Amino acid sequence: MNKHVLIPIFLLLAFAGCRSGSEVSTQHYLLELPAEYEFIWEGEPGPLPASCEVIVPDVVAAYSSHRIAVREASHQIRYFGFNEWAIRPDQVFHKMVIDFLKENRVFEELAYGRVVMPADYVLETEIINLEADNRQEVFRARLHVEFRLIENVTGALLLIHREDRMETLEGRNLNDFAGAVSRMFTEELTVFTESITREVNRNQ
Image 1 (cartoon, rainbow, N blue to C red):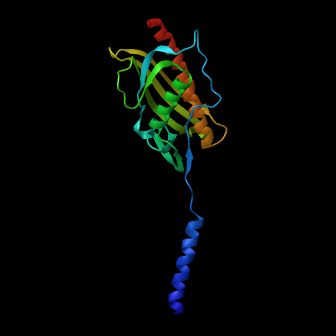
Image 2 (tube, rainbow, N blue to C red; image 1 turned 45 degrees about the horizontal axis):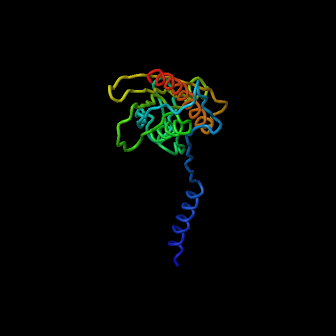
Image 3 (tube, rainbow, N blue to C red; image 1 turned 30 degrees about the vertical axis):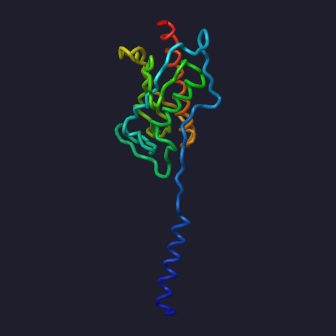
C-alpha cells in the first residue's frame, strides 16, 4: 500500500485512541429517604382515619431537569457538567413523600397516580430552590420547600409549611450534597406530618 495512504490512516487511528481514552463518564446522584430516619408519633400512633392524595411536586423550572444547579452569584446559576440527578426532582420527591407516608402509616388510605375516588385531603409540594450554593467560598446545600394540605371537598387550605434550609458541607462533594438535600427534605416533611396529625385528629 502507498505510504501516502498509510500515514492518514495511522493519524486517524491515533486520534480515535486519544478520544476514547479521554472520555468522561457522567456521575448520577440519587435523592432518597435516609435509611436511619424514624418518624416518632405524637400521642396515639396512626393511621389517621382519612384518605390523602399525594400530588406530583411542582418544581421551579430552573431545577426541574436532571441537571444539578450551582449558584455562583445572587442572580446567577450554572449547571454541573458530567454530574446529574439520577431521577428528575419532581419524580423523586413524589416517591419520597409517598414512601414516608406509607412507611409510617400516616393515613388509612393513600392515593397517587390515577385516582378513582376523591380523597379526603390533598397534599401538595413545591420545590422553590434546589441548588448547591458556592458563594463566599463556602459550599452549601440549599433546599427551599413548601408543603400544603388541602381539604378536598371545600378546597380549603388547612396547613402550610415552608422552610428555606441551608447546610454547609465540609467539601465540594456532590454525594454529600445529595445526602444533605435528602435529609433536609425528610426533616421538613416530618415537621409537616406532625402538624397534619394534630390537625386531622382535631377535626375528627
